[in-house]
Amino acid sequence: MRSKTLKNIILILACTIVGKLLSYVWEAVLAAKLGTSDQADAFYMTTSVFTILYPILDIGIWKVFLPIYKKLATNEEEKANGFASTALTAFLCISAVLVVFLLVFAKPIVMIIAPGFSPDKKALTTYYLRISAPSYFLMASASVIGAVLECHGRFFGSQLRQIGTHASKIIYLFVLYKYIGIYAALTAALIGSIVRLIIQLPFINWGWKYKPDFRFGDPNVRDMLKGLPSVGLTVAITNINELIDKMIASGAHGGAVSCLNYGNKLVNVFSGMVSSAIVTAVYPTMIQHIAKNEDEKLRSLVNKSISALIFVIVPVSAFCILFSGDIVSAAFERGAFTPADTVLTGSVFLGYAAGMLFTAIAAVITSVFYGYGNTKINLMISVLNIALNVAFDLILYRFLGIMGLAIATSISAAICLVVSLILLKKYIRLGYRRLLTELIKVLLISAASVIPAYVLFGRVLSLNVYLSLILSVIMIAAIYMALSKLLELSSQKYIFEFIRGFLKRKRTDDKAE
Image 1 (cartoon, one colour):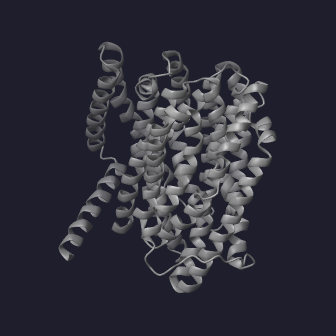
Image 2 (cartoon, one colour):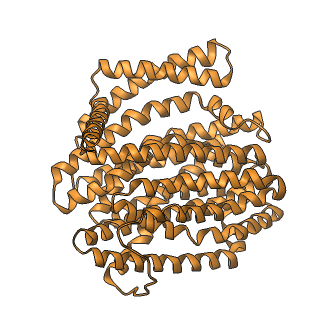
Image 3 (cartoon, helix red, strand yellow):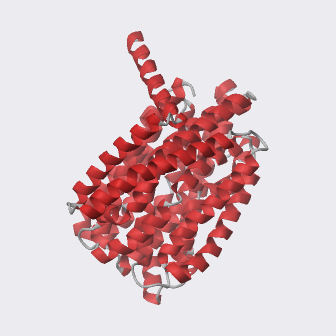
């Protein structure tokens, strides 16, 4: 992996960590204000629509727009600029239609996604959905501009939008919640989408200026729009499964939907930091290797990316599973969020945490398929994932309640990852035996690191939950790094190789300046 790619990973990782922490703050504040009330259930069912449409319009655009734009920008910058303007115009039109659709059909949409809600709860959810609908208008525009920035190496400008979005929402909520209550939470998304767009504009400094362009018949635009539905379904699969979980839980006791939301969002804070940074940074390099038929370099890049994910996510998953109750308590238990809510959300968090690694590796594999222009494989796997999740949901919910819904999502992700790896052989052959050996070693040393900390701080000593978690993390990290060094894990070597390469590049750049 080249030092430039590593530098981008470090930058994206830093921005992602800040963004995820701010995202957690947003959820924690809402949890303290809303708890697991009927109002909270209605609000989070409304945001489920957002969490499905957001990746379709954001990551989906990134996947279909970026490859076409990058190829054009390499040789025909003027044509690339024209394509960007046309694409931006197209998505503005799509966004406007989407907003009108949500306003007009809010009631039947709620009837579908919340079949178990009471009539009053459905009416409240419909009202909330209509209030939040305008926030979708600028979302796609910010995504197109973000992809353009990344193609020109302005990763900081692109990633800064996440920080600006969450920070503006939190400030807005803190200032206005005491005056307008939940309406501050509902309209905060609109404020966030405006800031998300504006914050990127100063980084466009290579001469491109947006001009409305309605030439949607352009072959490149047609190819982009044609690929968006399958890509959108694939990137939204995690959130679609979350919505399915909520649909089934909508008939349960009050607060079930909210607990599913809190557990899932907390998992995203842990898993998204590393996986998002790696996938975002390596995707342009993947496209370059594929375009130049550099199969060996592509294979090496994918192997190292998966190894890095295994090295980081496995111990994090083990920590989340064993300390699930303490983590949820520290994260949310304040204000309207009660100890009973902690117990239920902790069980959900555990179930979702079990699937962290599968989802992260799947994101790398699907990026390879996109790089080769094969959206059909990803679409097929997405449909399979949804079907499996529904089947396992119906089975496990009967025996395990809402915890079973989270576990079903993780099982479905594991099965679909195996299918993805089998289909990947069509393009590249990874070192599966070496990766499996590495995974087993990491699992063993993760258990050897996390279990002693859990016994000591979770069972033997009676400490404040915050102090217990901090000391546990320190102990786990020390044991894990020592054991991985002792066993000479190749994944640890890759991590250190990336860091050394970045530091070497940084020193070279400093001297050049």
